[in-house]
Length: 174
Image 1: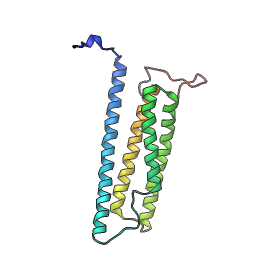
Image 2 (image 1 turned 30 degrees about the vertical axis):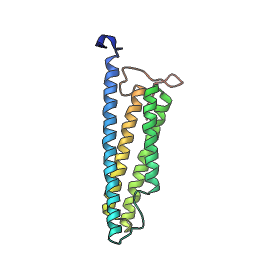
Image 3 (image 1 turned 180 degrees about the vertical axis):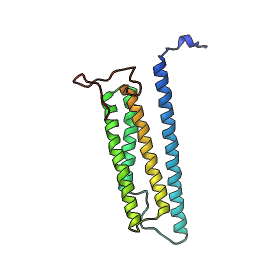
Image 4 (image 1 turned 45 degrees about the horizontal axis):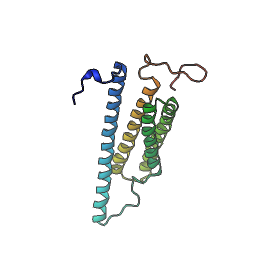
């Protein structure tokens, strides 16, 4: 069976542009995820080498409460950003944008705590590089999920749709 271009439902150029940008965001999220996986592999390889040499560290840097919470927040942002776009749901998109502040605050707190611990002689700088890189990649993934959520609000392309709140005021991203 042959299908011509004329048989396909045509979408407007703005929707094509949006879909292209969202594809780029998803690809970048995948790149950041690959970086995180490489860092986790390095941490695991270092632990194996330490155990082989009879050195056992007290704490694995990957089992940090705040890091685990950051993973959960970012996962929630990804899921809800995609849901907001698929369903054109402004409420869910707004939650993603608001949650980004929590992600940024947690990232900053994790960095400050790690630096403070290093200054106190707790932890190793080599582990810190991997740890901070994981945190940075998670924050960037969340940033891309916010960009996806903004598309469903019309913020990325404000000329395509005006988003109003219940009072009839334009949506303001704070």
